[in-house]
Image (tube, rainbow, N blue to C red; front, side, top):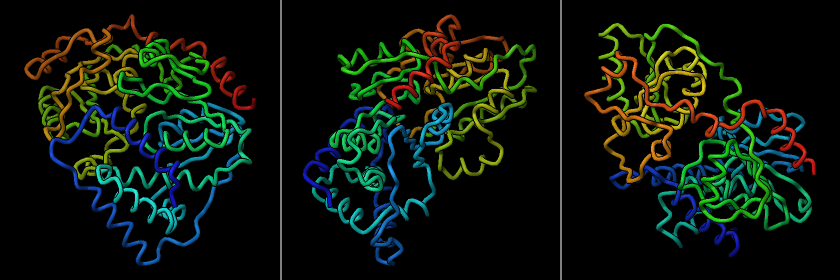
Length: 380
């Protein structure tokens, strides 16, 4: 069952998560009802055991919740890794009756959080699987997220038993990320540091290094410009992208669409067979067309020409009232509108100020020192 402290930690985690949301569906999303019904059926069919699989938590451990975070952590050597990117079958193994009942009661007590049911369930299951207690008080743990429900809830639970929790940046930071509340902070760039400091003073030491996602990217010196990559987020319209793809192909361009790895839409599944990883797609491309996605930083890092098209790809089911951070800070020097996209591709136009790249991705020569700093802190 959830203690009074646990319920308060969940509410803090949920409130911080709500603050980071840039896109929200215009219509109310009742998907949580399916999730609730699905796990209730598993419960009734006794597919979820009274017992659960647990995870041994050692010091000098990094915890990841997504494949992107897993890739970042893989840069570290001699570090224990707890990987919560497992399948539904494995998730069920980590769950038990008490988890489901506790979350059911919590969402009944606070119905405003019903729409985050699955996030709450993940947070409870992951944290309970670690069996946190006083024996872990001298541990040092590294998280690669600072704002999702599961990451915030886990951090609060760990710090409550005396664990020192560090944060390793996992993505480009926006002004909506919460104030840092970790015992040590490792950031990719000066831009990330300044963005966080605007939220208020940080009590932890901050180490600035380099973007560990970009170390496998190689600079492009391509002379040809006939391969166009359209990068989509989970809230972009696949139909708009495929229409743009058809127009470009009719003009003789080779076109590929890069999907977000967490995109579970039906049309995304149909395109999945032809979509490679972002790194593979960037290695193939000459030109990138994208809207409000920080993947344009990766594209610019390897010297690709970027056509920034703002909200043109945004699915009409979603809305946003926030200016894109990369545009607001000057990294994007020009936005192209719907009637300008084809001409921008054809005329060799570019949206990016390449002189600003190091401010966003850090000093790429400092990778070894940055990794050493992280590992030294974990060892203590």
